[in-house]
Image (cartoon, rainbow, N blue to C red; front, side):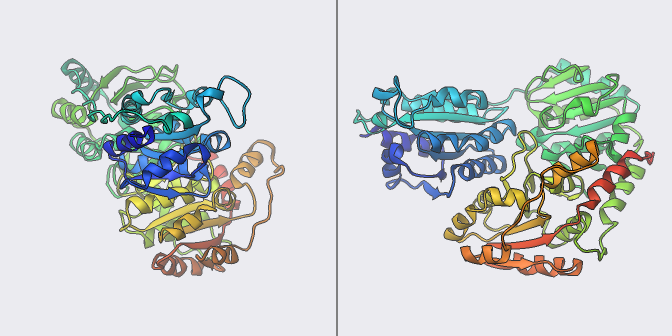
Amino acid sequence: MKAAELFVRCLENEGVDRIYGIPGEENIDVMDALLDSDIQFVTTRHEQGAAFMADVYGRLTGKAGVCLATLGPGATNLITGVADANMDLAPVVAIAGQGSTRRLHKESHQILDLVNLFEPISKYSTQIREPEIIPEVVRKAFKVAETEKPGCSFIDFPENIAGSEMAVKLPLRVQSPTLPDPSPTKIEQAAKLVSSAKFPLIMAGNGVIRARASENLVKFAEKLNIPVATTFMAKGAIPFSHTLSLGSVGLQATDYISCGFDRADLVICIGYDIVEYHPHLWHKNNRTKILHIHATPAEVDEHYIVESGVIGNIGVALDKIAESAVPHNDFLTANLRQTIINEVSEHANDTGFPVKPQKIMWDLRQVLDPRDIVISDVGAHKMWMARMYQAEHPNTCIISNGFASMGIAVPGAVAAKFVYPERKVVAVTGDAGFMMNSQEIETAIRHKLAFVILIWTDSEYGLIKWHQLRHFGRPSNISFRNPDFLKYAESFGAKGYRVESAGDLLPVLNEALNQDTVTIIDCPVDYSENMKLTEKLGELVCPI
């Protein structure tokens, strides 16, 4: 058998159902072997798009998404998406073809040391140097990528190894480690901390969603009557509609939820990774006690010195602590939560044009079912999505907040629609982020995927302008021109809409979501609200 055939069998053994990527000269043996496999190869229009698709697939499923490129520029084009997945703790296996091992030692066409290039942005980076080690390399790549904390594995597959003939070998049996139950001593210690606190507050991170422990989190909060804030990446870990939910925390500026952190004497960090929201932003005084509940030990940081760490299965930890801890009187949820709810609905009937971000948030939530999915790109709109989009279930609002790369929304929507064809999917993006990977619309059209791309149009790098105005009071080199997005959509065979008044948005969203193809909505946005929000939060008086 060919080494490439064994490689594909090993991918099948791992349960891979789809690979995103671009064929090239140095991966032709793998591409040929895939023709005899049930694995679907999704030919993308850019390797970055392929990596983002694998990234979002990993976030949504908990299984490693797979992307494939050729050597040299094909491999380097994967880097941004791979780094995003690795820092956002999404399981991904990235594969790149490579030149023959007979020319790796010298200056040669398109040859780069890919293993060392990917090593800093992956959990595991290796090259297949002998065909006999393929089962071990593939098994390790998937095991490492999917094990908490998850991330990216990279495999460099030289062309002469892929094309070599070898004796028949079988893939290795798939084994996944089971997280141990937490130590009873640590459970007892945590229960005492929770019971003795006067004003405890929960901060739930994406680790709760990765552990499929959202129900345990809700029961824990309910039994002990403790309010819950989530990071951007954990939206939906507790439904926004729940009476103990305080929404999302993560802005660098002081926000309403900061009031809860300022008053709390114990912050219970559950499945929280500091890459999601750095502790120096919410633990400025270094005096609040921290209880760390996670599958892995706490990161070392001067603002994150924990009183106790409960390591192991998060769901089991929450259940056990709740059995022993004493319930609390809710010290802030009612007033603070009502303030947040009022803000969310404040602009529901706003008629201003361009449309205010708050109005876009409100209308978008009205047209989507609780389990429909939004993929947020990175930009000024992300701040509004993170603050105001009301997620009711885990993984229904995907936000990149570790690496936070622009360009993820459109390829991410492609992946989401592949994973959940029965759900409505909306890519929420700025005009800048949209143009970075808009070529993947063709990929979606070719595969008959239907989703909506909602573009917040301002012809500027709005988030950068926001920061420039805050720091210097004037913008610098942030403007650009856009194509006609309606004609752009039509050139792909997609549908295009333009919002021309605030009243247009809701009916346009409804119509677009009922199309059987990709639809683009060009929605002018009033980003003067950004600075108004900055001023408002700067003058914030805690409602508790």
